[in-house]
Image (cartoon, rainbow over all chains, first blue to last red; front, side, top):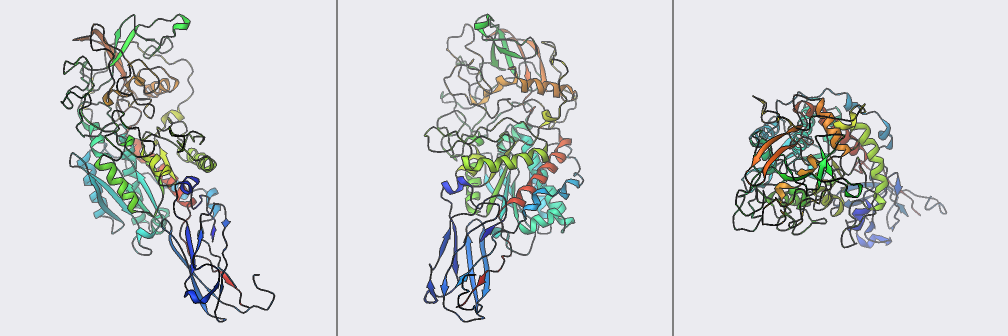
Length: 94
Length: 536
């Protein structure tokens, strides 16, 4: 996730008062998530393009579409979908 | 292995540097006058009825006087439901002595709705497609309604009846219009034991005598009025009430006069709080009123009395506010309003306890465009009071709220004469046995309408440029029933917080430009970019 705006998703004061983080998860049954948490938290993203990265290892077939959902009670729901692509051995993570 | 990577936000930082096209829009027609509650209600209903679904109207609270606190929700129909869009809250009229703030908020709502309806692809149309804008044009309708009363008091209070002096009677000793000019100002009474003396550079104003320099006091100061209830105190229990901008939880000052029996004690403050809590999609707030935290950015080091809460800004938020402040001043031209009074203020609660980026805005800053003084300001030290202008409409700006408006509040039992901006003044009237006069919420801050300061001198200079709406009531002699010979004069109530009606559209236009700027900086939902995956 990236925040390209100037204002952070959570001001410093917002973090101090404990406003909730973003949650981020693949929309998959738990048994298909081989590595990583069922749901990740991203406390905040500072402005100016700060990026947060989370990784999972999931079971799936090449060409399959997998949906992800990020949620925060202020910013609402953000969904994206990716297509699993075959990768040559040794190229994982690039 | 999957690497989900998608943008939560896609607002380009380049928007920061782009000249806003909305600044070129023509201002709306000038309102004939300020809106009293009936006119406000008519206007917001018409706005909602004629908006083709762009505007919905909601009553979020009903005051003790059975007035509704209206909330306009502006959002283009279709697309993401408005409650799921990032929202910006605009609140005006929380400060009863700042009726201009309510007019500006209303004008902003009108202008946004009209533009978005007639030009759906224009800047306002685009804003209302991607965001929801909640406008509460008059958060304190009972308090603002005092602006429309025949006698202008400059009160900060709502209409809740309170027994301020604990004598089992309510609202029985408010100020009185002794010189018959329709406004409540200040009385000065000659007294060698007084603390105040005339400022020789600006003889309309007074200053504290500096006894270390051999200066002698000549006057005691009082709020214009008599001891209606015969208890030896002047004006200590007038109409109302509670200051709705001192009634919020952040650094709430319990027990201080006018702050209310407890936090969010008023239907209108409670209703607005409930509204905010129910709308978690509010990502930023603009609060129009007498406070400011954007033109004068606080440094963020001060803490509240417990040492735990930051009084103003969190230190790590200061740089962001400073950046936005520069743009605010460039867009609006408002550069030097008085700083905010954070204790119990709405804007402080929104920022400090809800974590919402909140900008407290005093939207009218005529002093910033005044030419430099070529010589010390001067004016008549005394003379006949300005006669009430015949045929003058009830709504134009007149009088002045306390210059120290956002400043300190008096505490019951503290002695008049403490001075300071927005402070306490006057003293025990000669020959009266009741001891020091305790200031009441009715009297709060009026001394600043005569206490010499560079800011007040600038306001006097500004007043000289608008002779049709004199800001200062020239000192005139009256005979007080208990104090004897006295003079009445000072800055008119509302003088600094009620811009001329004809100026409201232009002020609102600048605030709309700032609104666009803020909206462009906010993290917002946008079509996320696709993540990527690798399979092994």
